[in-house]
Amino acid sequence: MKITILIPAFNEEKTIDLILERVLNQTKDWDKEIIVINDGSTDKTLEKIQRFSNKISVISYEKNQGKGVALKKGLEKSTGEIVIIQDADLEYDLKDYPKLLQPILKGETKIVYGSRNLSPRVGGEKKYYWGNLFLTKIVNFLFRTKLNDINTGYKVFERKTLKELGIQTKRFEVCEELTLKALKRNLKIVEVPIFYTPRSFSEGRR
Image 1: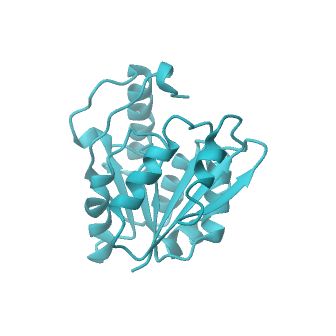
Image 2 (image 1 turned 90 degrees about the horizontal axis):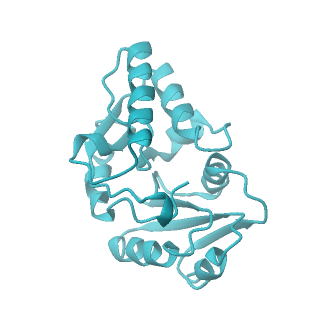
């Protein structure tokens, strides 16, 4: 299957070249496309992205519009059967790609979330942890599910399913939007443990 990797980026000049090198290395033997969406960065993010322009596709616009908009624009250009959403920082380990893809490749599900809460956490801002846990518990209560991490940055979809769900929200609330839409349609979300190293505000967390 052809894999699409969507990478929304906003002011990630410190990490974007490293993440692209790692994505290219991790997927060097894959049938894939890498689509980077420069979401109105005001630093050198676009300059660094363009160095890889012979190996990736680039979407860029001047004004920051949010992660939801970036993913929607990337999805419109995608052609792979499976879509991996990849953040442009270094919080997630790309070695988890095979683990994230397996449930879909085996036909067990159409949606996979990489759960940060199924593995030991290393540092991180407590308010983000508890906020995510609170939102996840609300969703579990409403839909009688047992999810662990609805706000994870690692989400994998069959492209057809993601297009059918659609993206309407503009910013980080896209995580809740996609989760709620999937559960309302009784779609199974499989969670797998991933390795996660959160960065601090001084390192660029927003």
